[in-house]
Image (tube, rainbow over the protein chains, first blue to last red):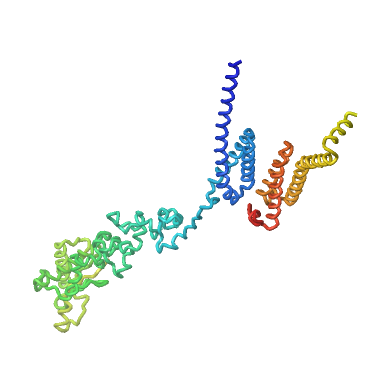
Amino acid sequence: MNLHFRWISVLALALLASSCVRGVQLKEHREQLVTELDELLEPALRCDYEYEIAQAQANTEFALYSMLHGRYMQTRRHITEASDNFQYLRAELDLRPECWSDYVEVPPAPPCSAENLEVDCNHPNCSEHPQCGPCTVFNPEVDCDHPNCQDNHGCAACGQYTDWVDCAEPSCMDDERCAPCTEYSGVIDCEHPNCSDRLECEPCTEFNPDIDCDHPNCADEPSCVQVVVEDTLVVVTDDRIEINEQINFETASATIAGARSFEILDHVADALLSRESMTVRVEGHTDNVGRAAYNRTLSQSRAESVRNYLLSRGIDGSRMEAVGFGPDRPIDDNSTESGRAANRRVEFHILSH
Amino acid sequence: MVITSFVRRVVDLLGARGVLLGVAALCVVGQLASCGPIVSTQMISDARRSVDRASSRDGAEHAIYEYTLATLYLDKAREEWAYNRYQKARDYARLAQRYAEEALLRMEQGLGPGEAGQEDGR
């Protein structure tokens, strides 16, 4: 009997202790719920969680009431439901900082350059600004005015990366070295890189196998210099090589006499040398003194004598023929001495150029 | 027969005046005992009408917080009444009516959630 009484007493004490512990726990829960309600009511109403906070508030109220009347099972149920309500609300509200009373709305950042006189690419609103993108992001083609294109190869100064000027490079478009030959100087400047293919800038005979004395670079050519000499002793016209002084011969002979005569013939030889396709006829003439037949023979011999001298100067024989006309083609009056002197002459008639 | 003899014995013991006082006292006690369910029933009924009015004006949409509390408290009042806890049933019925009226006030005046309670000073 005593044994049973002891066991019953122990059991009663255990139950009493257990209920005390549970009571303390529930009281802590209750205080926690009240705190949660105070904290979450306003944010929840601000952000339209009205139904959820109403549920939580009612469950909290019911839990308080049940605890007050010692109905622990009911209290636990309401505490659990209220806790679930608050947990859900807190999770939702944590995602929306604007619901909380201490939320300070961050004013939108000003436009990219509103507060920056120059575009500041570190500014949060400047990320879309054209000047802040990579060189060609906003420009399909390289825009060298773009600040980020400064290091672009296509934007480098003309010749910056090469030892030569590449006129296809955009930066070389305005370079003087890429301009047409005479754009800046007005005259052909053979030092200009674009003048190299101009005829005036080529060496005298590079493109003209024959020396063209009209070529500006042929002025120093010997054959062209000789033409200038012809102006004083020998003049090449359309049909003749005219000599300004007479070629002299020994009396009644075909032998050329006098250094001046050879000098004249040398100039004639040079004129023929510079015109390789020219053919001439060397004519000998006399006055009418003496027999005509003799004079014709003498003039023929003198013409051949001149031709032979020119042959000795390197003129091809096929380019020259010698004809003696004697007294048959006078150019002056044979009755006077000066007229007869003029009729005694050697002429060079051009047969072909 | 037994009752009549019992009444006579009581009248002899207390006297006629005493019997009358006793009967009066029993009536008062009885009245008080029946007052709980009657009053709470009346209050719950009033609260339900208020909640119905709020519901008919779409309180569930336009005054969610107040309307939800009103319905929850009304349900709880009925539950407490069913367990014969009339005092608490009255308390919850009072709360249900209060929130139902706040829901109506909020909808009439276009107030924000919880502002109707502040408007009427509660």
